[in-house]
Amino acid sequence: MRISLTLQTNQRSILNGSWKVIERLGLTLESWKKNLLIICIAEFTVLMGFGFCMPFIPLYIQQLGNYTPEQASLWAGIATGGSGIAMFLSAPLWGLVADRFGRKPMVLRAQFGAGLVVALMGLSTSILQVSGLRVMQGILAGTVPAATALAAAQTPRERLTFSMAMVLLSVQLGNMFGPVFGGFMADHFSIKLTFFIAAALLVSGGFAVLFLVKEKFVRPEQGKAGTLKDMFHLAFSRQMLPLLIVMCAINIGPQMIGPIIPLLINSISHQGEAASSAGITFAIMGGFTAIAAFVTSRIARRVPLIKIIIFCCIGTACLYIPPYFAQSVPQLIILVGITGLMTGGLATASNTMIGYSVPVAQQGIAFGLGQSANALGGGLGPFIGGTVGSTLGLRWVFPIGAALFATVAIVVTKVLGKRQLGPGLRK
Image 1: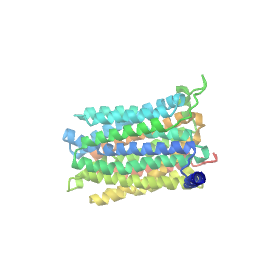
Image 2 (image 1 turned 90 degrees about the vertical axis):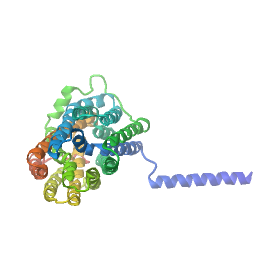
Image 3 (image 1 turned 180 degrees about the vertical axis):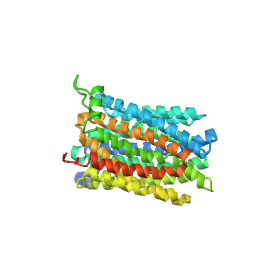
Image 4 (image 1 turned 135 degrees about the vertical axis):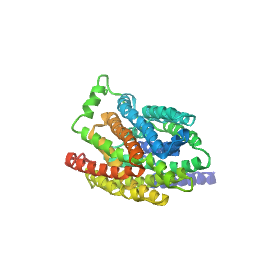
């Protein structure tokens, strides 16, 4: 009997000690941190899926149509741009639905919808089918803004920068690993196969959110839910409109060069593994973007967000010039990859400003508008890049992108320079 009691006492001591160790290690998380962790894991999986196939669509198009690099850049711009324009039109409407019915259903819609569309892309036999499915993807997808809104709605306001940075960090880690594995699969097996693997990853991320994320959503009272009128009023308000314009502009540059990179690598490569090299390029960009997002989350409490945006715009303009002169694939990979150092700062600061600019009840609409602005940039960028690449040459997208970011830095200084938003809602 004494032995039994002694064993029970020892077991309790061990359990209590283990529990204290777990608490000290930070594994016992508050509910918002648990949700944030699952959201980040799901977004990492989903973005790794996108990275498996999306960067290689220009090469896929080139194969389907037997096009030259210049012709493929134009069609890639049309396909990618069509997706961006579709997302530009649909994102604010999804934001309205999110504020009425919850953010979690929007994450599920985006992840499962994207999984279906990506699988169908792997079955495509023509450029028109790929372009049409890209438009459908723009309407149904948008996993990042949906996940961002879900995370923001449940995060204490003083920890919003941290939450936004963690979501972006998971996104960029997915962007980092996906292209590497996808490029290897595309070069050694087939590009079509990468679409089916990507679809499986997208769906698995959806199931993680479905079963593990708990949303405490309170539906607005009748008559108090957001409407189209509210959306347009917010979009054209003095608080939001300048920020949306800036978000659109800073997203044009990366989307200009994105479809060009695989084609430019393919044109100067003599080893025939353009997909793998492009994958490494996007992985390096994703890695540097993740680092920049983490650094931004640490300094945002001390440095105004506007100053971060201006600094990153100037830095991006400077980093876009050297790739124009790259003469080999390794040079191009390194010079393009390090541009991610500024991308993370821009994305984290602009998304955080969206969260601070509106009350929690309007964050679904606000992040929908933010995604709409990003999507408009994502639609215009490939059109501009594809047109420049097919007329002036593939390399010219870099100096034109540099000029764009220099202009944005000037505009931000003039238009948003006096706005000081941060954890304490300083104005």
